[in-house]
Image 1 (cartoon, helix red, strand yellow):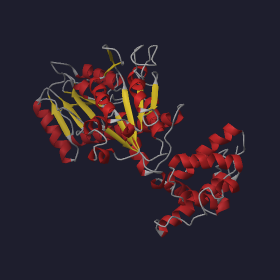
Image 2 (tube, rainbow, N blue to C red):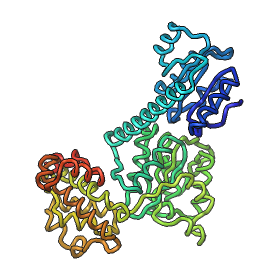
Image 3 (cartoon, rainbow, N blue to C red):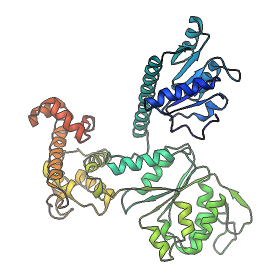
Amino acid sequence: MSLPNSIQDYSVLIIDDEPHIGTVLVQLFELEGIKAFATTDPKGIAKLLDRDWAGVVISDVNMPQLDGISLMQQIRQQDPDLPVVLLTGFGDIAMAVNALKQGAYDFLEKPFNNEHMLDVVKRALDKRSLTLENRKLKKELESHNVPGPRILGHSVGILRMRHIIDQVIDTPADVLIEGETGTGKELVARYLHDHSSRNQANFVAINCGAIPENLIESELFGAEAGAFTGVDKLRIGKFEYANGGTLFLDEIESTPLSLQVKLLRVLEDRKVERLGSNKSIHLDIRVIAATKVDLKSLCDTGEFRQDLLYRLNLVTVPIPPLRDRREDIPLLFLHFARMASARYHKALIALNAEQNAILTSHDWPGNVRELRNLAERYVLLGGEAAFAGSLGNAPSLHTSMSLLQRVEFFERVLIEEALSHNKGSIKQTMEQLELPRKTLYDKMRKYDLDRKQYINADE
């Protein structure tokens, strides 16, 4: 049987030059609800596998085209943690020991026992699942610890957004970021650049709405000396300056229609010509555009080209407004307050329950930018001055919240206040709230609270 285009749908890949062995194993696994695929051709198997495949390989040792040990070595070059189970009808102890030393997960002799085979493969699949989960966690920790922008929060919308970003972070695909004013569109663009393989090249940001229409073309594409009045020397455009890296086009909806045609051509051809020049400059670049409006609506009114939208929105990253991710507000506020505390050399005082309630009930029309502004005022001026009138009169909990949601918000606020007051000490927090240790841990897990975030919160 020829190889499939993708093996992502299969949990077990079987390679054996005896077709009936593959057929028997496929039937055995599928009876257990495990999708399996069998082939007699070992060539090309290693290239088909990737580091994210959540499966196991079973290979015969003695095959005329490529022996199982050599195949296993090819696979281990792709991913040394992928379990490979070897089969042989001519096994001996020395061969088994040698195979295990070289990295085989297990070594089975033919004829094999079906129950034993199932047990080995299920354990191998469990090991593979754990390996991939550990990799995912390690990658997430690395993304939070490296210098540069970080995407904080554990709300559903943020987790969904982060998942999209992780899928495309190292692909050449252009990206369209959608979000209201103040949601952090440039931060997401910088995150995409800084965590990609392009991070050693330039990240170039330009606000398309802040540049006069008669200048934006030369700003983007560059201009030769004398190309038009006022240009007395060579001007390098943003596309050329970002070559090898990332170009961020903020407020893409503000670009004039006349420019959109030229912009589309550059995006499609990956070439740019300076104004006044006939020479094309090849581009190796990722373009990230951002908008705060619905571009489809602008297309309907003729204010934005539909073909340009189709070119930009190959991958769309929607940023949820802050009012839709209320559970992230305390973490974000603490993060911004700590930054302000370090910048202004001012002590950070923990929020009280009333202030926390105000934070989580406010609608935040200015989104994260408004929250950051409040956090800085809080550090500089103190809680009373910062909250007085800045968010309107102290509001009641949001009227769209159910009773259960209001209770959960209040409970979370109290636990966060206690953790902050006790600098992350579980024992002191238990005593203050009069909660058993298990109950406190259960509630912290429920609200995704990490004691480490509250250690030295007032320093």
